[in-house]
Length: 265
Ligand SMILES: O=C(O)CCC(=O)C(=O)O
Image 1 (cartoon, rainbow, N blue to C red):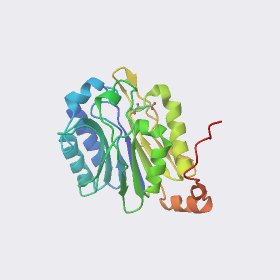
Image 2 (cartoon, protein in one colour):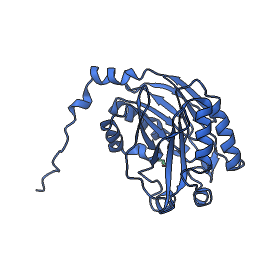
Image 3 (spheres, rainbow, N blue to C red):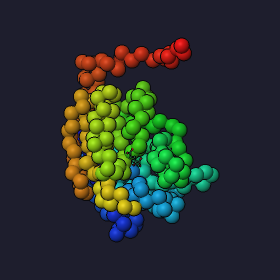
Image 4 (spheres, helix red, strand yellow):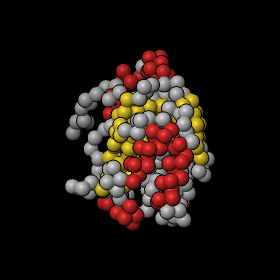
């Protein structure tokens, strides 16, 4: 299976519309790949909080239209990263879109863990509540977004739902880059799954982005990692390695569920 992880630079000197056109053209260039992955909130930038409301789109808005067409033009499965979604009946959501090679929407995932503690995304957006997997011909994707990476129980839920390839679409800050690489490898090892983690490059809202998108195999080996700038990371991997790893080292079968909390003295 061939995947292209597109690490987009999100800088303020480019309009959202220009970036949308540029990203669509880059997706089209990936014809021949099985799967293409984009980062989180690449229209606005994950830290450009003031832009969220201004650039929010209905689910089937301009980014949806452009990405659906790019997926079908290239004939690829496209994880189109996330958009600030305006729910007509509710708040904004940080919503990832996955398109099939014919350009149909295969899945939408609303980010469950919102970042910012008591500001930014945590107060501006609503929280998703549903785990999302997507069946591809060769593997099952489990979807997650950025800060989700810090919450291992989400990934266990995805694995229980059949995920074999964990996709993390992110806008991760440079300041915590070491956590990014460490957590991507940890999620791969503990879940015996591939991890495809796509981040942004550039600087927006004064926050330098980490870049360093990464692909990790179910044994925790790094198959490819990007540098700091804009880059397309192309990787070939054997989805059969998930079943082989889980069979040869069946740690997932040794989970002890339903543990009792400690007794009070
Ligand atoms: O957890 C982190 O360090 C970064 C998370 C983040 O930037 C996000 O979820 O947008």
